[in-house]
Length: 90
Image 1 (tube, one colour):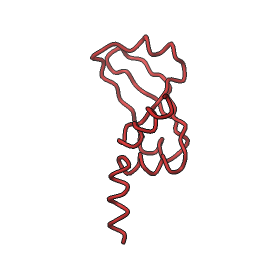
Image 2 (image 1 turned 45 degrees about the vertical axis):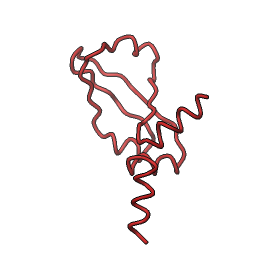
Image 3 (image 1 turned 120 degrees about the horizontal axis):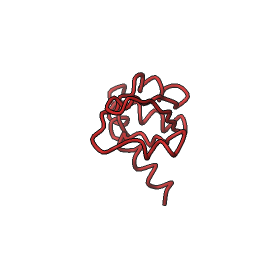
Image 4 (image 1 turned 180 degrees about the vertical axis):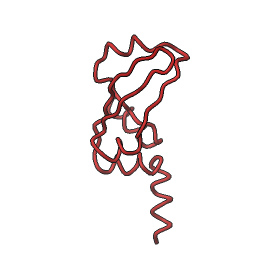
């Protein structure tokens, strides 16, 4: 079930990041302002990024493991956007 959920997120252009340290989840509060610099570069690269919690003033690492196909979908904005973009090249 987790595999299907993850695939659905990627198909809709939602990045299924995971916390490097699961304990960081408890440090983030509802309503906190979070910022990820270089998001596109992280997806195109090794899938690692740093999140800055601007409300609480701390940073934490996140990562996502994905196939090259999934990376293409995410960079396009999801599966449907990827298909639409491929049609423009034809």
